Amino acid sequence: MKTIRNYFLLFALTIVANITMAAGTGDINVEIRPLEEEKAVVAITNNSGSDYSISVKNEFGEDVLRDKADASESNYRKIYNFSQLANGNYRMVVTIGETLCERDFSISNGTIDVGELVINEAPHFSVNDDVLRLAYINKTGKDAKLSIYQDGKNIYKKELGKDASVNEALSLAQLESGSYRALLSVNSTTYNYDLEIK
Image (cartoon, rainbow, N blue to C red; front, side, top):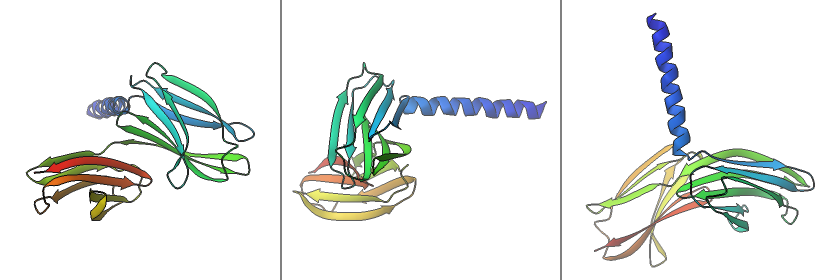
């Protein structure tokens, strides 16, 4: 009887964890369904209640297509014609608030091959007692880099690795008064955080 109760408890905890994870991502999904002749249906489910933007980036991180949708479009469906895009690797990025949904795809001689969906929450930056703190869950498995800029000039750079959990604390005590920007770069995605040193 105790074993059955333990299995039931484990099952209930799994259900709660799945509901919590679904709520945390706002029930977001991004699908790319290839059709013929370099066309694909893009289907986005967004039950977060937030407006969202859609972009397709080339392998250099440059936008090649952009679109917007408002919160009322919880089930976005559109046929995209990718025939103007050269053979190569691309990334569809759907930005909903602080959440980035990314799906890589490639085009090769009219054929579209679609990769896995990766949902990334924005990192958390904070400054307290002259210490910059960064917390980020790296779901991409790609290298993360932290950089600090002042007036467009890079004054600090650190490789943070590919770990799933990125936590960094950096003393700012030696910096002069002024405006700075911290950048976290992961794959082709960059997160900015502006700060003032007094």
